[in-house]
Image 1 (cartoon, rainbow, N blue to C red):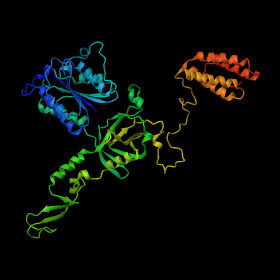
Image 2: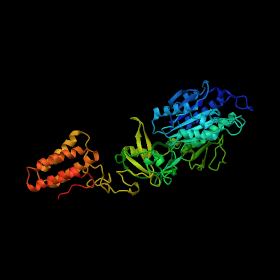
Image 3: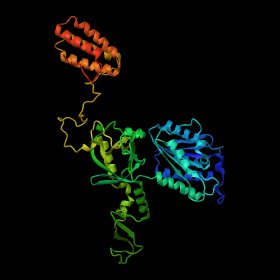
Amino acid sequence: MPCLILVDASLSMLRLASRHDQSCQRKQMAEEGVRHLLQHLKTNFPLEFSSLMAFSSDCERVVGWTRDYDMLIGATSLGVGDKTNILAALKKSGDYCTSEWGVASPCQIIVVTDERPFLFSEHESFPDGFHYSFPFPCKLHFLVLTSSDDVKPCDVTFAQNLGNRFCDPFGSCYVYTPTGVLSSTSVNEMFQRLINSHFVLFSGELACGRLKSKITLMPPPMRMRSGSWADQQCPDSVTESKNVQLDFPRIIEICGFMHLSDLAGVPVISRHLVLDDPSLAQRLTELAKSDDKPSILGVKLESTGGRKASVAGNVGGTGGIGIRLERPDSSGLMGSEKADYGKMPSFRILLHGSLKVEGMAALTKLGDNWYGMLYSAADSRKKANLMLSIFPPHSDISWLGDLNNLTHTEEEDETEDPPFPVKPSHPLSYHPDSNLVWMKGNGMQVDVQKVLRHAKKLPDKQQAFLKDINKLRRTALVYGFHDVLTLVSDQLSRDASGMAPSEAALLVHVAKELRENFDASKPIASF
């Protein structure tokens, strides 16, 4: 997710680290820690957007949203401002994230400051009329450069309450302080704790029967609550039984395959690129670099240094090549496989190519009544990636029905009806055959004229007349157009004067019901 780094540039950051360490200012330690964090993001999350801001009494954007981490690292040497105003900085950072990413995309805000913003009481910190919270899901991190030997150390409880006030109801707040005496070592250790908690690559496995592949997801999936999508958007309405945190599984199991058109427009809560696990590639690359001897199909060739060795290696000669069989290492791969990792077969690449060519998607099971789909997504004409879209937990897709009931089908027969959309067991209230829709005045006029035409053709059109008059009456009552019913009733009364007695009696009865009966649940019936 996008990451905004907010660094305190006030005068208080120019203080020395502590009485024990007077060789470094707090501003310098903050800049060093930020560079350490950005270097980690550059190495492990190169596709994520990040931005850098500095704040004192005002908040200034140093580097906008970018993936150029070299530019971010080069801009960490910040100027010096005046006093700290953390409330204005948090509000401006929230507006800045919203203007770029909207209110649906989660963001991380990292505030690097000293203990000064957290020394006063809660009553003094919030001026009258100040009510603001981030309108988007946010992870707010306070990295406080404070020391245990300060006169007034940071009030961690107040910092936590301050963050919760800004993050409620969609996010969460975390407060980090150095361990022990404030120093460059303790500050770097504090940043490393942040990295280990919230900036760790996801490492999992993609499985389809016996085919498996080590993968990672970018960005890493977050923990989420169970319940419907509406419950997640309105946390106050979530009952205690539904408010259960769900961990993303390490094994993504493919249940089956569907046409991509059948899954078009499904509700999703996040999308992730599916990539090969870089930790495995890095480990194999390091192992390959350590073996400078060429190898072919698991048979390593070794120079004998002027001796001609046999398989046993004890026959002298004038020089040559010795042969010994190589056993797999702890990773289960031979040296040739380590050297040519990029040429190894990958189930992820096979799946991506197949889905792209066939125009299909793979339905994946993530947990109990929790699903997602894998498909090929193209960001340009020449570039396509395997994408994972995660459905809301415990939520059904209306045209697919209960996903737990899906099963494998035989070869499709063109004469059979398509399996989707699934026909509902009850009539839909918005079905066009059961209700009228009046978006413009001429639509209502057409429906009224249709009823009057049926009235003039009684008794042949009696069933159609009663059906259409009930639809017209129900729609008018729902919309509150009572004047329409009055006008139709008057017109039916006038038409009854020139008709046969039986038809005239029916029209008079219907006209009376239109004027007196306003219960939409009780249709007009023949008498």
